[in-house]
Picture 1 (cartoon, rainbow, N blue to C red):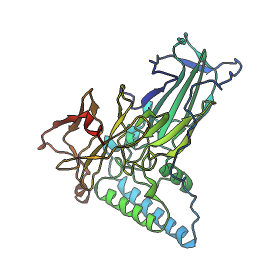
Picture 2 (tube, rainbow, N blue to C red; picture 1 turned 90 degrees about the vertical axis):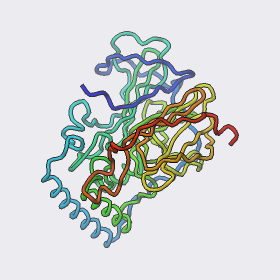
Picture 3 (cartoon, rainbow, N blue to C red; picture 1 turned 180 degrees about the horizontal axis):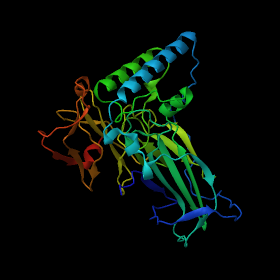
Picture 4 (cartoon, rainbow, N blue to C red; picture 1 turned 135 degrees about the vertical axis):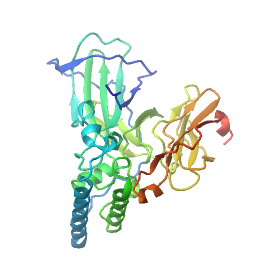
Length: 368
């Protein structure tokens, strides 16, 4: 069986606790408990990006939208004549255990098989890809919209809820009633991928979509840092998520660390367990520097970024930190956007490249 793609974390009441697996069945009839004392994500006043404003299209825009939709339908009709590879066939990628699930409001007082240890209290959360709309063409597991699942523990009571993260991308596609942003892995390959990028460009020119506030799906990672739960994907800024006192899940907004983070950040930053600092990467697939490295103090202040010199843009999905060093994998999966014009994929395995590990001292930033 394939491994579960979801990533998870535990929101600590005081210190991180190990969570155990338990079975749940239908809700019990026990009275609902008062969750006022449940240690959930605190309400924090912080600078967020303004929410997406609903589109108010004029006659010209409505006509343009209908035209572009017809062009895309013709594109899909032509594209689906060719069998999709398993890596982008939704019948393979999101079937069985990986099939999408609907959102669920808080379901309280679930029946527990066994006993919940007294040391387990707080909220266990996980993040994963869950497409809002059924794919009509190529789709990879990692293309889906981010959905956060929360299991809340308080004494002998357990609650569960799951909600899609309200990214700017998702809000706009929900408003238009269908996908309008290309899927990074399942659709952006070959000549069809080039046409999709052109469609996105002209839709933007006509004011039908607004990619300026990010096109990420926030589906790949979760981290609890500086009293904030952040949902992330490496193509955008993090999104601040809140678990409420009623065990519901809310999207606070796109989070830029008080205006200091102006670039995408990978989905798996690392927190130093001693200092509380968070270390992160950002990579660019178009222009140099292809990789940047930076940190945040435990109260969320960003350091200046350090440029890491790479000869070509490289998939830098993860990295590691030790007590004294940062370790970066410079591997053979690289980005070559020009391959799309040749009918290929922009993500390429370069067999001639020598994989290597880059390491440098962790405390490079201590003096600013």
